Image 1 (cartoon, rainbow, N blue to C red):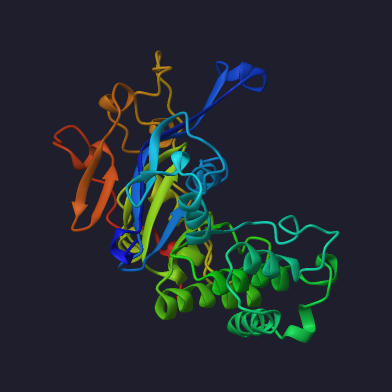
Image 2: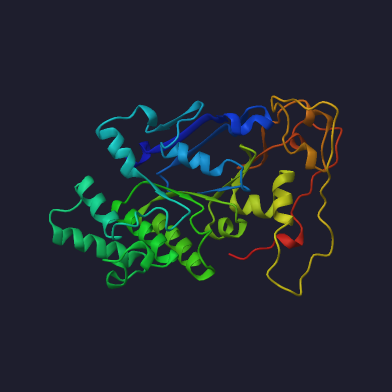
Length: 348
């Protein structure tokens, strides 16, 4: 398969969880709601999926990795449904789409030395001609993520720091050279210094090896640092997408504006001067089918139609879309804010 043919496409993916645990909300939870997007290997991309806890980000990651079959919709790789791959095709997909998870300890088996994650991959995918060659590959990959073999090899997971364990997973990615990295909140448990190093490695992987990364995060500053494209997700729906600069500096959807206006500036002399403009609104009848804007209760620009129908993506500016009635045919509403408040400033 050529680089141009390597493409992950999500089409109308919906994930519904049902059971007694969701009895109070009608017996089901819609974690992902009709999500569609694609990731390309050529040209390589960095795409950030941004949203608060419970918005459906990690569920999308598991679906892309083939760990959880969606309730409806499809996920294809190279034009083939990933849940119908078998044999060599499935093994190729597993090598070409690599995960980096949030917990830098839970991904390791505590009973084995960390070397095992490398040797298992080497043997499964027949990467080395001999043990000496395999050892050389491991050392090269460790150097690529700023780790010294003598500091990490031969040790158990609990003997390493969280930053070292997470970079070991990046070293494994470097060794396999996949087309795609699915990074699910990979820096949320790392300190600031290691976080920047981790992000720089992802940028280097894109520029040097042509790896595309789907970076899943709730941290707006890390998404801005990485650059590339961004998608904002809320309650299982992608409500805005565009370049990071457009989404961060010229947010279109009121939810994105609220996220950015709540971001504090790391300067004690520059304090908030005003309260966030958030309203709580109610109506007599709200559609239980979710066929409406799910942000309507908190939106200061809410329209009557927001309670009655679901907004579709609308082109706001070249390359940027928002699922909001503010940008459709309009005559009955106030203009949205063009840019976030001064508290949204970040530095890349």
